[in-house]
Amino acid sequence: MKYRVKLQLFFNRLQRRYRVGRDRGLFAVSGLIRTTARQSMRPRGKTRRALRGRFRRTGSTGSPKGSPPYAYIRNGIREINFDVQGNHSVIGPRKFKNSRFFDRPVTNIHEKGGIAVAAGARRRYTARYPERSYMWNAVKTLKSKGKIQSRFNITLARSW
Image 1 (cartoon, one colour):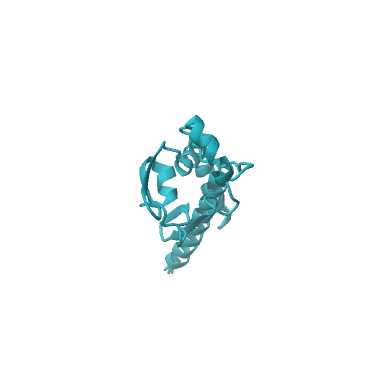
Image 2 (cartoon, rainbow, N blue to C red):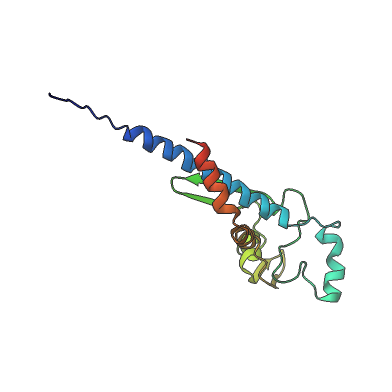
């Protein structure tokens, strides 16, 4: 008796399904982080310009240290985008073209804190900002709850 066995392995199909599932998982996790970061920034009733005199008297610069900054306008600092490229995803606030008041982007100032130099028409201003990391807080909160891993696993499993 002779037996002949033909074995076909579809590695290309398996790799394609894995790539599709990985990309879907990254999109889902990136969207989850973006939503959490946007929701952590609470809108404030008055604009910053209307509150300027009050800030000068009290010495307050906005939200407390360690908490996310206030969102004064709807599409300002809350305008967060994400992009998935291969095995990684980039999530963060959008840098607007006309925001050249400070020497570095406002989103970077809020995330890392420090001293910012603003150039006015006639003089330069320096301002100290405490660290108000809202992107890192969003990731840390989701990771401690186990939502990042579970969302990625569920999305990857559903793509099969």
